[in-house]
Image (cartoon, rainbow, N blue to C red):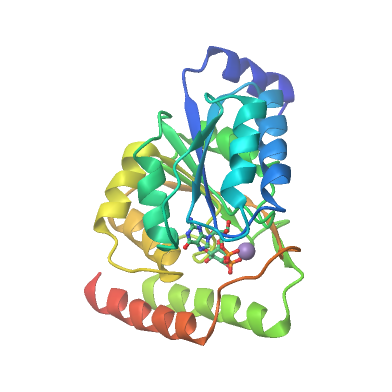
Length: 250
Ligand code: GDD
Ligand code: MN
């Protein structure tokens, strides 16, 4: 897999990648993640834009985003803020409406998802002409760093149960670092019923159901350094509930 080939591909490609960054209290992380995305995508020569969806973060994330827009320009950094915290699923839908790319990359803004993987997702997509490329912590060199035992158990458990009940044909169902063809993501979002954390899992299940092709790239997931995750007992309950619903209906 030579670098030469992928950069040649980028030069002749009309493809454009819209990277959706939902943020809630990410003022410390945002400058770093944006800098890294720009660095890796500029190096690989692909056209891209970053769409930041901030939900009225009290820590001033939106002000930081405005500064970044001044530095990198309005073509590269698009701001689509909402007045208050309305949840991750609807943040994607909201951001997608403004996307001008034919491909969409979804990732967390807290540095758990490293931008260096984006060019690998793109290469993978082109290799197999996939509809979806999903980052996976559960094959090859993939993995999780910095989680406590409980969170590892919850993630493994959720993936194991889903594999058992739904046989989705993808190894990481709860991760959210993925690349989608834009029209595929639109279709998936329309057909997904769940809210919150379960959403990621349902997206992959539906993708399978509609016969979309899924490529996988091993990724490492590093726990956030600044701020905190919103995963708790009620999310676990929601997950199991939605899993059983999908089991019964798909
Ligand atoms: N706009 C907006 N609105 N952004 C939000 C909201 C919201 O209501 N809630 C969270 N975010 C942003 C965060 O700022 C971060 O960039 C990203 O969404 C993920 O939120 P985290 O709170 O860091 O999630 P997590 O680390 O617990 O969970 C991640 O890993 C899970 C898999 O293990 C997420 O990627 C989950 O989707 C994933 O299932
Ligand atoms: Mn996180």
